[in-house]
Image 1 (spheres, rainbow, N blue to C red):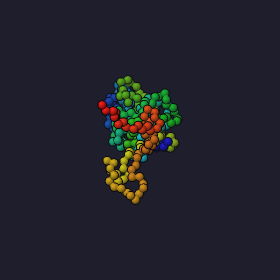
Image 2 (cartoon, one colour):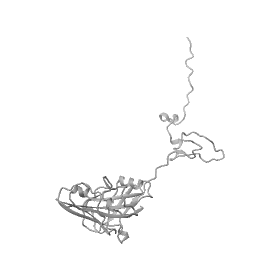
Image 3 (cartoon, rainbow, N blue to C red):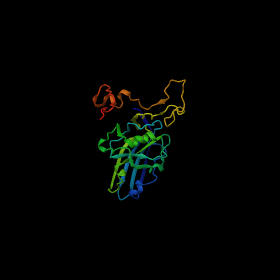
Image 4 (cartoon, helix red, strand yellow):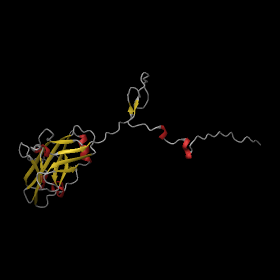
Length: 265
C-alpha cells in the first residue's frame, strides 16, 4: 500500500467576527504567520459575539495516480486528547496552498461543504498520541486520480452543519502538521492502487485495420496478429450452443430431406 506524504498544511482562522455568517463565510482568514506551526487545531466559538472559526488544510501530490484507488485512508497524528466531531471536505482547485506552496489568508473560504470526503469522525473515536485513521470515500478517491493536487479541509461539526445558534466554544482536535520535527508523525494518506481497466478492443495498427474493422492492407511478410483484443477470446467449444447439442443431443443426427408423397391418383 503506497503512502502519500502531505505537502503543505495550515490552520487558517477567523477571529472576533460580528456574526456567525461573517465568520463561517469569510473569504479570508489568518494563517497565523509566515512559519507553519508544529500543531494545527480546529475551533468554533458561537455566542452573541464575537464568533471564531478555525479550519485545517492539507495538500497532497497525486500527479502519479491515474486510476482511482480501491481504498484510501487519511492518517493524522493526535497531539491532544481534546476532540470534537469533525468532517473532511473538498479543498477547491483555486486554492493557493499546494504540495510545494504555502497556504495564504485568502484560502480560508476555498472549500466545498457539498462534497464531503469522509463520514463524520466522532469525538469518541479519537485517540491521543497516535495516528487516527479517516476512511476517504469514492468522491475523494476519484479526485485523487483526476487531480495533480489533492486538497482536503478538516472542519468542525458546527462549521460543517452551519450551526451557530447555541453559545459555546469548542476546541480540537489538535493535529501534528507537515512541518512537525518528527517526520513519522506528519499527516499522510495510505491507499490501495485501483485496477487498470481492460484495454478496449481495437486495431493493433490503424493502417492495417480501420475503426470499422475493415482490412485495408495485408502484411504478407508477417505472421504476427494484426488485431488485438482487450480481453481473451472465448474458446469455440465454450461458445453459444449449436445444433449438435440441441435437446441434449451428443452427436449429429442428419435426416435426409423428404421428397414428398409420390403416390398419384
